[in-house]
Image (cartoon, rainbow, N blue to C red; front, side):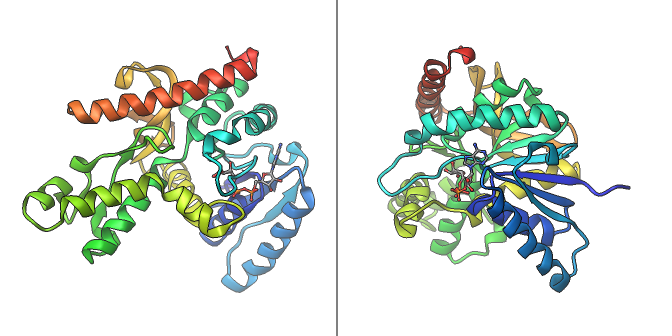
Length: 320
Ligand code: APR
């Protein structure tokens, strides 16, 4: 069987990290595309040399020609601009919308059968625009944010409770912004939901509230520390988990920005919801039952995403 081909569209901090993990895990041959082709080629050569040390039989290439992504099985999109301190993800919309238009054209022309995972921010609006611009099937275009936000929540819980990261399952739904919705009732430590931990005195409500706030602002915390750019290790690992679920037909249930057609009462938009990812891409949207306060938070988050989608339509009338 021929090796899989994975194209990283954008060879910056996340794109380079993605390529490194994909090569190391022998997921397939890796092509890195960037408008600054020299950077993509330099990183690819550096990693290709490293494969002889970690013993991985994959090919790596860098390019500034979309033709080189031809036939890719998976495309992971990070092309665009990251946040600088003081910026919100939404501040990136004008610049990154134009980038999505170019990327969509490249993927549509050379890799129309790929499973496409978008990471570029503001995530929910950018993945929506990428699907519209490309016309690819909605089950094959998905956004990565929920796995990352949930990973941050899980890390804070493991640190606070002194429990292995392996025994924590956290869920964060909604848009990838400050209104995201950490799902306390469905997040578990050793199988126990967080509200049960609080009721039984194993976790204080104050500590839980503080972790929810820190999760919502988790990306900004790293932007402030880095001073020039945004997080890349955890975003890359999160997208790789989604790509592996597709490539290996694992059918994992992962929070992802997915296209909604009636689920959660929404139509023709993308927002973070639990989905099953398998060989057919997004195979199912899972509807978590929500109580009144969860619904209210989800609706607020969805409204924030819809404002960004409207802004995209104003900037790019072809999307309206
Ligand atoms: N086509 C292809 N690549 C592009 C284009 C374009 N039109 N415009 C910019 N790029 C490339 C840049 O040259 C750069 O190498 O995208 C890359 C982005 O990399 P970084 O600036 O290092 O950003 P990164 O940290 O990887 O984040 C990328 O993901 O999480 C989001 O907010 C983040 O939107 C940002 C994206």
